[in-house]
Amino acid sequence: MKRVIALVDCNNFFVSCERLLKPELIGKPVCVLSNNDGCVVSRSNEAKKMGVNMGAPYFMIKNQFKKVVFLSGNLPFYCEISKRVMDKLYDFTPDIEIYSIDEAFLDLTGLRKTFKCSYEDIIKKIVEDIKNEVGIDVSVGLSYSKVLAKLACEKTKNLQKTLKEELIENKTYKIGYREIEKELKATLISEIWGVGKNTTALLKKHLIQTAWDFVSQEDIWIKKNLGKVGLDLKQELLGNSINPVKSIQEAPKSISRSESFKEFQTDKNFIQKELNAHIHKVCKKLRSQNLLTGCISVMLRTKDFQISDIKINLVNPVNSEFELVEHSKQILDKLFKKDIVYRSVGFCAMKLTSASTRQISIFDGEESIKKENLSKSWDKLEEKFGKGIIKMGIK
Image (cartoon, rainbow, N blue to C red; front, side, top):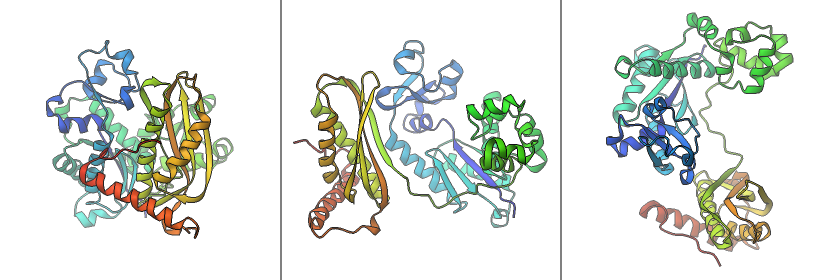
């Protein structure tokens, strides 16, 4: 059976979330900034029209765009709104692959009978429900593969750029079988999801400019130059779903956390406190996913962007910050240099395994359980009283 796949993408997501809290920002040029107000990570349509570029450093543009409202990011709030959006999508199908904080693929195959309407009407209903019940605008692309659904979603956004808002009845776009050739001929190969600069350069050497030029190539040529990935891409562009929607999320291979300091630092105690905060956030995520880490890494980045790091393997996998902070302190002692000025510190948990498979040593089992219970109590306190209710000190 041919699959019917949709991509739901939240429009200017971080800005849209901020406008839920501050409706007075609707219609104004707004930008959301990254950690410690480093650079632009989300722009309203108004800010885009003024020429604010994604990733632009705040210190370089704040005086140039004085009419733009610049806001510090609030990731926990964005994650909460993301969860509301994704929960709403589950009202339509259980076959959902959450691709990022603001994007998800849906497999809608066969749901016309369930909802007694066309696939186009289903995705229009998705747009309406999320707007009415969550307050977020989304764009939806519909087709027969992930790559085509992604392309259709981009087409939706392009329409929103060229048409006035009041002329856009529904923020959806469908690429049916009859439209595939026309759409691929009108799309540069560089605009296709998953095609990077190196691949684009290679294809251009062979006079392949559009997506249609690419799918017109013989399989033997594509396999020779791009391997199986290239063959899969060709099939996806032709409307054959090679990369299905994966409703079961795979466990991450690592979980990391880093953040630039508001001011450059030479104070080791300050850096350790920041590192402790990162460790807690990583451990909390490990516990939420029932995971343990068997290997950790601490990273220091200097003012001049030079990076040094040390990685160690743990005797027993854990997910308690009360254990990992001790290990990190030993690593930081080796990394830190008194005469060096630092801009950030980071922590990474690797070699992740399921907590259900853990085997506790008879020599340290009791102590490990105490620390784990203490960590879980910390989670409960934050859940009840808010994040930051407890902070880990240094000794």
